[in-house]
Image (cartoon, rainbow, N blue to C red; front, side, top):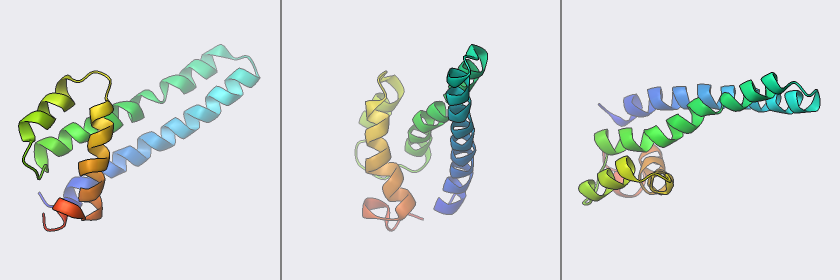
Length: 109
């Protein structure tokens, strides 16, 4: 699978979940301002898909697109590390450079 195909579907879902979280943020603000706890709670829950997807993309990227020498190390960190700091770090070291076609991902199809 080439880079464009891989990123297209992932980014489409990321944008949808970000929009849902934005609407959820508005619901939280309105819910808190009007003291509607259910609306605020529903707005807060709307962030869950985005947070899941942001944490899941590095695992998918590592499985399909990783270009490097430390595959076993990254796999262990991404799958077992609970705080998700490694996933955030992986975003900046691998996912974004692959998306921008820079660094070690410049020549990867």
